[in-house]
Amino acid sequence: MSAPAPEVPNAPKQSRTVSAKPPKRRKRIGAKARSSMLLGYLILIGLALIYIYPFLISISGSLKTDAEATQDALGLIPQTITFAAYERLFTREPFALWAGNSMLVAVCVTVGRVLFDSMAGYALSRLRFRGRTIIFAAFIAVLSVPGVVLLIPRFLILSELGLYDTYGGMIIPLLSTAAGVFIMKQFFDSIPESIEEAAKIDGAGTFRRFWSVVLPMATPALVTIFILSFQGSWNELGHFIVARQSPELNTLTVGVAQLVSGQLGAGNQFPLQLAAAVLMSIPVVVLFFIFQRRIMNTTAGAEKG
Image (cartoon, rainbow, N blue to C red; front, side, top):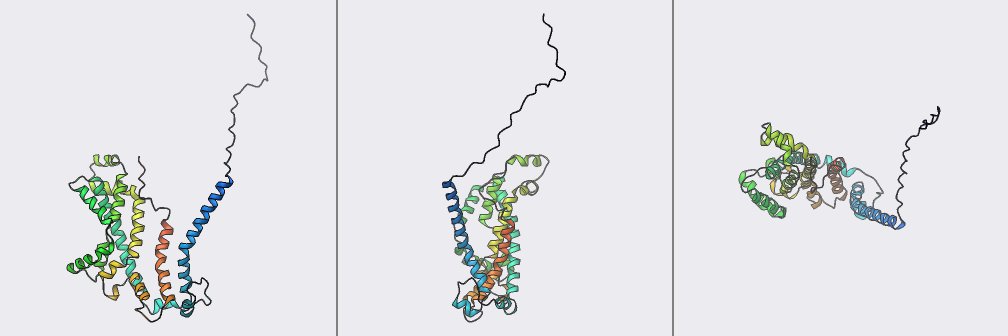
């Protein structure tokens, strides 16, 4: 038998070499794809300008004099910048009263819709009771009814209940909507019922499971209801026309409508009307900028676990 070969003292040991992965190359965008992207961006910019241009006209027109606003209504750069229209809104017109009424109604309606729509949606999604399908079908049917059709019946009901020309008559009929109930039901349907089993075993009741387990998972839907409710109640006009008569209960929409119709003065009053429109749109614009990333696609489901 041959003796084993002697080991070389300083011989380097063989080691496994790990082949380095080549860096990923970015896919080059072809000229045709770049042209398509550029065309798409140009179309989006054009659409954005179409929507922004009227708002820019409102801001510019509110800073013009009455004569200049009449002669050059579409000009974006005022020749003489004046804040007389804004000063008149707060000194000669009850704009602060209108804004206070609108804020009171919008806050109450928003809180009510978030609460009642979520409760009704959870009941239609989780509770098993006779006639549930018929009730949900009725909600869907209400969505197809134009709101103007319900104004006269709503006026008659408010008159019979003694709620006409009161804050209650302006707020209570708006505390829930069929669209909000539909959104919440569809979202709750996407949450597995197995998530509530542990709480049910621990003895939690229906409301406790709704409030402590399911509702925190429905934050995207709640944010959607919150934004749509505030915007809808802030911009509501038809209901406030039939629900109130006293000038002390005027909201911003009713007051601005009176400005546009010329009931509060003579002349076209373009700067005054545009100034009121600009100030009226600020809360909704701020709300959308704050929550724009949270607005959900109502057809998207919850994350299943």
